[in-house]
Length: 234
Image (cartoon, rainbow, N blue to C red; front, side):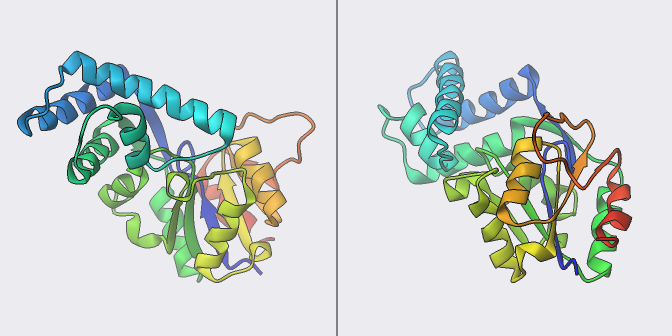
């Protein structure tokens, strides 16, 4: 019996990403905050530090499988040579969580979440991210209260496909992994990772980049509304 559903964020519940415009806007807001607080840093230097920070963070994730908190990444890679207060560090992280990304809610997302809750399912967000913008997005979309747990890799130090992220989600919901379904769009992170953790039912959202030789998902759907009958069939 299915008792819980885990959702990926990007290209599952929301679509979007970053653009030069969103990054410029975010950097501008962040720099203006620092400038007003008396930090001696040009806008151009701030932009370069932020860009270099993300590149270094991605390298750490790729080579060491280590997901750092945004505060740690910013302090280590952006402000290692600048004395910045913890309050200002948290503010900068929050600014980038709000402004770095453009996004749209996927079609039928709220309807599906409402149906699942109505059927007694517990719901978790399980996402890989170096920021916590998912919380901001869900609150702005009035979806936050549908979630019984929000699991973000940057708060754990590891991410999908590491089985531990799925185990933590199940533990927070007080369910067995065999009683869960995972919905996402990445073959390795969402499908293989979930299977290896003990989740028996996985659903992939198009566009799904299927990789040959890997275990296929239980189903592939074009729209979130299609997942409900699949979940309650398994």
